[in-house]
Image (tube, rainbow, N blue to C red; front, top):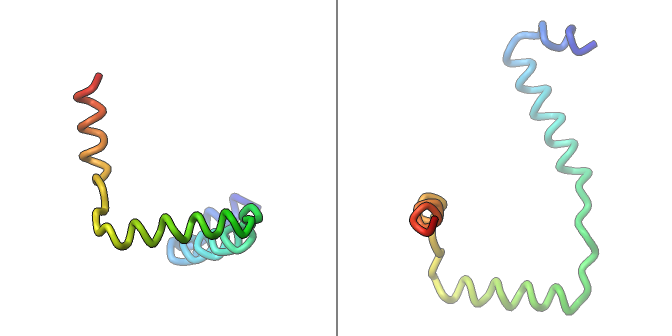
Length: 69
């Protein structure tokens, strides 16, 4: 069966991959959050958005890590 799929044209294989990925994402169920957890997350998000500081990008973090080694 897999070998048959590998013989499909690229566009069809990409469509199949996207369909599979979407179905996996749809099945993901996160942990149940308590009301206190939700409130804490909302508060942290509000502070982050109000601060306006997006922090460091990945390259800056990696560079900082390299410098500390």
